[in-house]
Each structure stands twice: as structure tokens, then as C-alpha cells.
Image 1 (cartoon, helix red, strand yellow):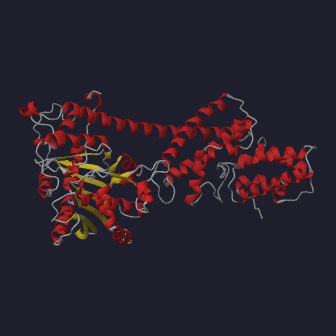
Image 2: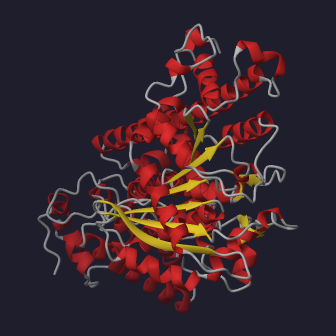
Image 3: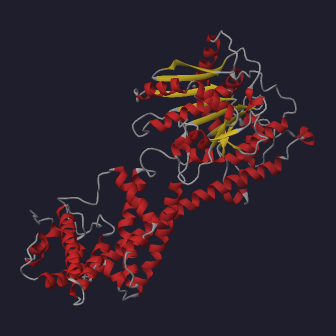
Length: 583
């Protein structure tokens, strides 16, 4: 895509500058430095220690570090790059990260070394998290260096799984020079919760080899935001995982001589340079004809982190800069297209729900509910509704399938807003599926019911959320019936009436069907008592009213029930005005 046409640019430099102007990096590194200075004893095994520091007002910093006396890094040892499946941890009765498993996929995996370091102090971490949760008004920053940063990330994930972000301040995890932690399924599990990924910031110097140590294992995949820094003091942020991997590879290739990964890389100087750097573009060596172009902005980012070299050094380039820029642009374009597609899909959902609302109102004006109108199509608009329904169905089937892949957590996989959206969809659209089912002469809809309806209903019930569709005291003329299977019960009641009317049925069969019909009466009365059924069922041409006439003839005047009194006396007509008193 032509930059001059797209007018797009990457905001990585601006985000990097914004982070550098805050004091979060400085205070986090100070906490790490203090913790390291407090550890004076030697241990026979590599280990990670943590401590609390009040570096900022109303802020608690939890710092994770390795002992300063260690000269060997277990990541470099044989098997140091191995990944451990979360499902295998669960089998081993370590369930701390079970919430990262998907309902349909259990291949999330974590680096074995980082996991082992975390497990050594897991009981302590559980107590620490309980303490942090008890102070929801305190801002929590979790930080760590190297493998200490890996443990800090795992600690943060455990904390995120335990807190309610709507009532608690969002924690921030800042790591310095940490290696990659998990595989792509691990990253996907984190990204399924939009607020989780934004809680992680990983600072990486182009002089520190440890963050690139696991690149040879292609299974590793980054998550969160990466702030890459160079010796010049410039820095730039990347958030798209594939772009982060490309930059990690490019900065590794660019530096032929790197420090030993076992050595401690001090980020103090890097942070100091970042803070002092006030105008990254002013220090650029690369001449960019259009600094606001997309290509120009990516070149500026690569120059800032020491990958793109000046004109005099172009002959010695290790990385093909033009190719790298094209890759970064392609990655970002894919991300934009995904977001655009999502926005378009959401817009289509809103439009088609509005169309069904219009269809519902139109049908009511014709003295027939939209269920019966769709069941017995008369006009072109009835056929058009099938298209609207299909678009909505595809969207919500995909949403349910996506939720099934989400990490396992307590409660339901949808947030409140999405849960209500799915519930409104189910109550609006499933009656149309039911109408189509019985229009074809089929029976027993429940055995053919789509899985996504069942899941949406189950999750709504599990959420125990107040139901906005059942509002006693307000007009119920426009509400959707709470039970989206209502018309199934109506159709089955019709079939029961047919059996009773047949002269060749046995007395036992007749009594069984009458018992079903009595149960159906009680079901309808309970819905009416709670104002949980649409008043459209009482429209003259509705299937429900047809059923009542058949049933009333079968049971006769001697039949006395709450529903029969309401129907025979015409009291049901007051239901839509919420003036019906059902004792």
C-alpha cells in the first residue's frame, strides 16, 4: 500500500517516549537493585527471590531477582529451552496455571526453567497474592530482571486470574532483559483477555543477549508490549507478536559480539539514557524523506533501536532493512485488517438485530407475532429475514467457539456486555429457528438444538446476572420472552392436543398427554406472573391462541385453573399493560 495514500504511521516511537517520560522504569529498576544488594548468601541451586518496596506514593513494587553470586544461567544448560505443557502440570497436580487451558485446546506451554523457579516458592506466592488482593486501592507493580522477570510474569498472571479488574487497580508487570516465556497457545490464552496483555511491558536492550536466548526454538512466542532500547538512548515499542520476533532476530543478527548470557546486564544506564532522550527523531542518522509515512516511521523505529544503520554503514548491513520494514508493515496491516473486520462484523450485528426488531414490530401491527409470521411466510420480507438471521447466527456461533478456546476461569467466558448481547440474540433469533423446524413438520426441537444456543443459555444462567428482560412494573409489550424455548413448549402442547383428540389412543396415553398439558399451563402462568413472556403470544393469530382454543375445547367448561380463568374472562388482555394480578 502506498504510504502517501494510506497516511498511516507506526506509533512505536511515541509510545516509547511516553513510557520513558514516566518514572515507572526508574523506580522498578531501583527496586530490583535494592533487592539484589540485600541478598548476601550463596545457595547451591539457582533461585529467584522477591521483596516489597515503596518507591512511589500509594504504590507497592514487588521485585523478583536472582542471587548476584550466580555465574551460570540454567537457560543455557541442556534442556533449558524446553517447554512444559500446562495440561501436563495439571496431571502432575500442579494446577496454578490451569486457567490458561482452553476448553477445546490444552497445549499452552511455559518454559520449564522459569516454571521450576516459580514452583519453588509457589505457596509463598499464593500468600502474597492474597495479601495484595486485600488492598484493592493500592497500585501494584511487579518487576523482575532476567529469569526473575519470567517469574514476575507468572506471578502477575496468577494475580490477574484472582482479581476483579472492575473493582481493583490494574497491576503492571515490568521486566528487564527476560527471555521468552511460553508458546503461541500461551500467548493466545493471555490475549483472549484484552486487559491482560496491556499489563505487561518488557524492556530489552540491544546489548543484552538473554532476551534472545530462546529464539532458536521456534515454538516460543512473545506477549505484551516490548520496549526495545539502543546505546543511543532511543527506544521504540512493538506490540504485534510476529513483529516482536522479527525485531528480536534483527537485533540479535545486528550485534555480532554480545555479552555472555550468564552475565548480569545492568539496565540503569539504559534507563538513564531513555529518560534523557527527549527528541528521538532529532537524533536520527537515517534521512527519511517523509517522516510521517508508514515506511518512514518503521525506519525511524529501527534506527532508534540500532538496527537500521546510516548511509556510510549500509554496505556492512547484516539485516536487510527494506525487507524487514516490509515485513513489519505487512504484520501491522494484518492487525489493522483484523480490527477492521471485527468492527465491520459488530456493525453488521447491530444492523441486523435492528432489522429483526423492525420485523417484530411490523408483524405485531398485523395482529400476528413474528414467530408465526416467519413460520408461515407470506411476503418477501419474511424470506429476507432468513438472511438477517444467518448473519447473526454465524457471528454468535463464532463467538461461542472462540469462548470455548478461551482459558478456563471461574465464572463464564463472556463479559457482562457480551453476555447480554448473546442473550438478546438467543431470545430474538432462536424462536425463528424453532418456527423453521416445526414448519418442516419436524418434532423434538431440543434434540436438534444448536450447541451455541445451549452454551449461551448455560453461561447466562451461570452468571446469575439480574435479567433486564423481565421488568415487573414496566410495559412488557416489547420485551423478548425470557425462555427462548417457549415456542417449543407451545408446539409440543399442540401435538399433545392432537394425541388427546385421536380416538384410537389408550386411556393411559390420554392421561399422560393431559398431564403434560396441565404442566404447560403452570409454566405459562409462572412466566406471566414474572412478566417473563412477551404479550405478543396473546395476539389473535398467534400459535399460542390457537393452542388455547383447541385445549379449551378438550378440557371443557368444568376445567378450572389459573390460566383458564385468565383466558376465559379476558383478563390476559391486561397483561401487556402490567395491570394483571395473578394470585
